[in-house]
Amino acid sequence: MEPRLEVLDRAECLALLGTVRVGRLFFTEGALPAVQPVNFRLYQEQVVIRVAGGAKLGAAAAHSVVAFEADDLDPDLRAGWNVTAVGRAERITAVDDLVAVSGMWLRPWVDGRRAHFVRIGLEKVTGRRLHPR
Amino acid sequence: MEPRLEVLDRAECLALLGTVRVGRLFFTEGALPAVQPVNFRLYQEQVVIRVAGGAKLGAAAAHSVVAFEADDLDPDLRAGWNVTAVGRAERITAVDDLVAVSGMWLRPWVDGRRAHFVRIGLEKVTGRRLHPR
Image 1 (tube, chains in turn blue, brown):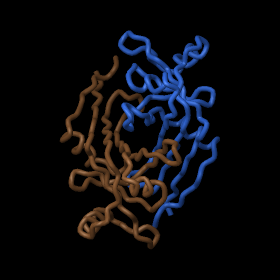
Image 2: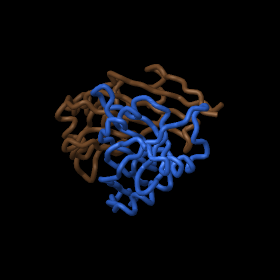
Image 3: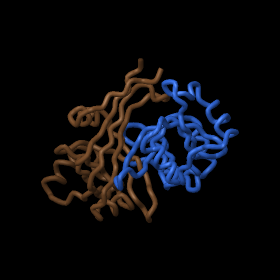
């Protein structure tokens, strides 16, 4: 029997995102799709990721539309959930926000260099939960 | 201390993909990025996913370039691995391939309907392993 599929509303999606710390950022790099695992937190109903630089930051700087995904699924896709957010990536530059956001990480510094923080507006959030029958 | 990053070669990436059964497919749906968890197997050095229809199948039919990602990571991104493959998605239609591929699933049928199988050519495979210091 295939699992029953429950469509989650925005509040349920945000609550589930709060239960994990690793997600995946999907973006475009040199006209090709790319994926990178990211450590994230929720802040003001946005996904905030910490990046050390590189393509992710480039995508953020360009205000490009990215997809962010997090999930907790069993190996056969019979139970668990997944949430996808699509939104514009934007580097966080306001001091207030930087202070608040960096405090959410135990180590906001990477190898002595300050990390950058990128927020993704959650304009479109979709989620599903699988219920085993 | 940040984890040490090891870049994996193609053989290592394929070996790791063989240890999990759930991945994530990143594609374009209505000009917007979309992500969907998928059950997958490796077949002839390609990622084969089973789909019940919908956008994923549409992407496959259109021979679009998609990104596929699988990982096994700890919550703080200090240990584990991730592999990303970028390639053209293509619906499997040859009978020989369909028989071989559907046999890799315990239940190749979805609710009495035949599932479709889509293969993703692994033209570009990248992977990283994180080693805690």
